[in-house]
Length: 189
Image (cartoon, rainbow, N blue to C red; front, side, top):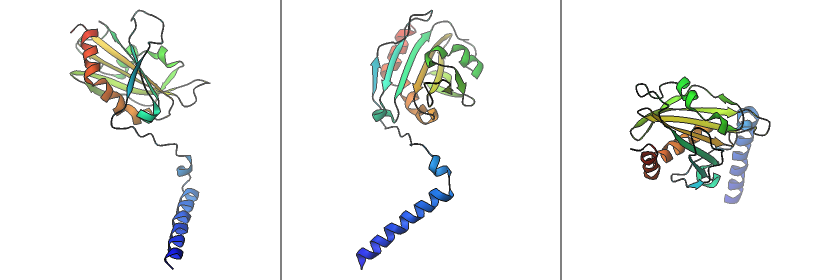
């Protein structure tokens, strides 16, 4: 008798889920959920770009198993390239500082940017979708923050259409002690 009730309950739950998928089409189109762990593992990698007027920076990768989706982060200082009085105050200033060449295709903003804090520095973050034939689901996050007139510019590339889900993981990494030590050396503080 108990076995029959358990089987009936299982079929009932399955039926409810099937009806929900049928009558709520948005559930069918929902993609995988990106869940970032509490302690993602970032590995420093070789700087993959040619030398330009800003020089090399640092490159890091967080694998999908550690961050929910694979993240490639590129960061470098741009000395004397930021307004010491206003900092990175708006999306226009963020776009002026951003390393769009790292995105391997034109980026289209996914909305307005927003303010961020990295240690004692303030800045701005904005997300983009990368338009291109080879990157149908690629996105990017552009981040710039400053110490007086010196800016730090980070670009994060991910093969996922929802970069907002990983913003906290990226900001947490930029606030880690090792990264802040590198910032003090890079900016000559």
